[in-house]
Image (tube, rainbow, N blue to C red; front, side, top):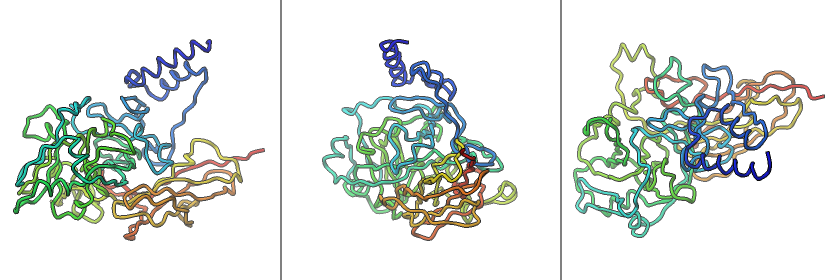
Length: 431
């Protein structure tokens, strides 16, 4: 292959990537395509996470490429669900092009005409508003918040017994600095009337069901007396750039500390309502047992009338990102263990690791604090002392005293997983 020919093929390949023309390629096919371009055989190994039912850190779907996105792991294509590969979590901020994607309905916007797009604020208000993007940027004070956006079903593939639904690994999450305006400021401008109870939000995505059903529209509501309402942002910027269209362009709701189900994408309607929102997405979907930690059993779900409540705040979690178990490590080689931690209840104040499967624990060094809702990176020096297998373990504690438990949970939605993570690594002799 000549240099000129290689460049031509590379450009063609990149054009295919930009247009989504290689969507559907799996690991092997994607490697093969890249090898044809580069003249090199690229070997990508899955990231193992130990002896679970699903032994992979990420899900096992194919790598696909969508507009504005790097190769991500496909969970489903209708609706679009894409998972972020493990290595993108080595830094506190998740690149926009690698940020996970989760839509609920299959008819999603693929183009927005900003000269026509408007945000409607309506319902039980004295002064209904119709705002352009320029109105939002010019008429309201700009604010920023760094927050983790995590799918409610992140890590669902870990549940036993098996839970139906998207079989996410650990990569249905991301951290970004979101800039926009306070929802509270917009609501104040609309002058909420007395007797109001909740604020309901809706985006542009649509389904194929009847217009009065959850299969047609996606709506989520927050109580007006929820303290988090003062921190909710209508964001038009993500990590210093416009939102990718798959992550909610032109604006999306940001609800710090709460699961992504409340982070409405392509936000277009804000309604003040006077009665509890009883739509499908509030009373049927995204609900958890009203029990400690949302935990129950399949048997209790069948035998008892367990009250279900809407999912809310994210529990404390931590992850080891590297080493990822894909390579044998030489004996006595000094290593730096690296990872992330976060909690919806407040900032991370402690991360601990263990190299003996949780028998003894050592404190890790925390990275910079970007805010109470952000990823907190951590590092720890480690030298393996013997050959064979180690089980590396990590747990985090937040400012409210919440610490990860070493027991899994079960609920029929596959939500709230935060069991202590384990990573098996193999140490060999280097001579």
